Amino acid sequence: MKHFSGDISIVLGGAAGQGIQTVEAMLVSVLKAEGYRIFASKEYMSRIRGGSNSTEIRIGRHTPRAYVDRIDFLLALDKAVVEHLASRISKHTILLGEKEKIGREDIHIIDVPFTRLSAELGNPVFASTIAVGAVLGMLGAERGPFEAYLRAHFARKGDEVVTKNLEAAAKGMDLGKHIAFMEGFEVTLKKDESVCSELLLDGNTALGLGALAAGCNFISSYPMSPGTGVLTFLASKSRDFGVVIDQAEDEIAAINMAIGAWYAGARALVTTSGGGFALMCEGVSLSGMIETPVVVHIGQRPGPATGLPTRTEQADLNLVLYAGHGEFPRAIFAPGTPEQSFHAMQQAFETADRFQIPVFVLSDQYSLDALSTVPRERLELLPMTNYVTETTVSYQRYVVTEDGVSPRGIPGYGTGLVGVDSDEHDESAHITESASVRVAMHEKRLRKLDLLKENALLPESIEAVKGAKTLVVTWGSNRGVLEEALAHIKDPSVAGLHFAQVYPINPQVKKMLARKRIVVMENNATGQFAQLLEQELGIEVSERILKYNGSPFSVEEVIGQVKKISDI
Image (cartoon, rainbow, N blue to C red):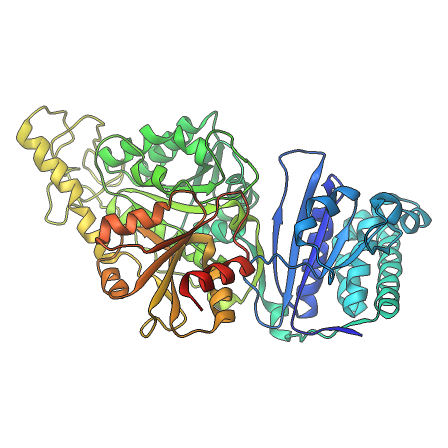
């Protein structure tokens, strides 16, 4: 008998339109209610119907935080799934599906007649509920949480629909238990009752909650995947939290409206992807010159141009770092977990408001779509400060200060005139072509960078850094995969550092990297963050672990790459 007791990878595969997302939503909700710690990630093609998409759901004894290549159970809804995931299917994979639809005689398939069973209930839509029931039955799950979910989820559709779904759940669970018995495997995963009260968050929701916690009350965006999820989340909460939602006519309008909202006293956000952000660069420069804050979220995907619009990459760091003509300070955050996403949004708004600069939050398709369980207490509300000054008749918007930060007023709050100008200007915001005033204003703006560096977040250690000889450095969404890989390797000579803020870099980081062999891991082809570390800190990066095929790093490949580089 095959026994599963530690960590299970379940993959659901099918064409767009076959209900994969419905099955995932049901399954993760019920597994959480059962007390299982989960992590789910998805990959999908850029089409409304057809293609081959998959979702991986990991259930772990400890909290899983990353994607793995291994597939323990594969629920295949059509033949294309088997071909699409062939490199991940091993002799140990238990494959479930309808033999007639898959049409493969060369592999062992456990026949699960979804079509026939749903037809017996009178409608093919019940196939999703049967599929979830079959998986839960194989896992030895209790019926109560699934039935409670179905009653709550379908209550608005009436008693008949609820009853039919309960029947479908029973059929599926009975079938799943039968399969487990006949195939000779047993699942005994440890449950944790505390998981039931935890939050189930994806990256979009975590960032959106962070924006609300930061006092965001205006969002202006033109939809572009994968950044649109933050816009739709805030739109769904707009009435409860008083958020003004503007779906702009284009990205240029979106950033300019957000800057205008900040000028009027709002806390505004723009969300987009790399292609959309390319159109915003003049607006970014405007923010830098008029010293009006703006927060921009960029959900990264592979380019150039349209590239792979539904895949993941970390190749927009340089775009954001150098966006806008002229020289002006900025800050860039790149969270790696839902908790960090929640905090990074708050830090972004605080930094933008305090220093009157554009601030960017970088995510990617992988982190935005990934789901995991998060204890509520980890979503800490950070202090929120109001940096707006009540003006007087003698108020000067751009008065020169020692730290470069001038008091920021807003129209109507006080008796002063709040002028701004995109041309070079004097302290009162009047246009100037004076060389001496230009130098004074330019140096004033750039002095903020010293304060930004001093206040920049330090990277978080993964494993014991002090005694390690090799340090694997990463940023953004690669936090979880590096953490799991190093925990598996368990070699004191190798440790990791994760940057949730990638610019500016705190000067103290140089000491953390001293006398270490530096390896940088990131999802792009040129090692953009490795270049930034070398440029800013004057260090040497010995090796680069790079991936740029549109897929995230898996735990297995990071283990292999780190072992190879470290000679373990």
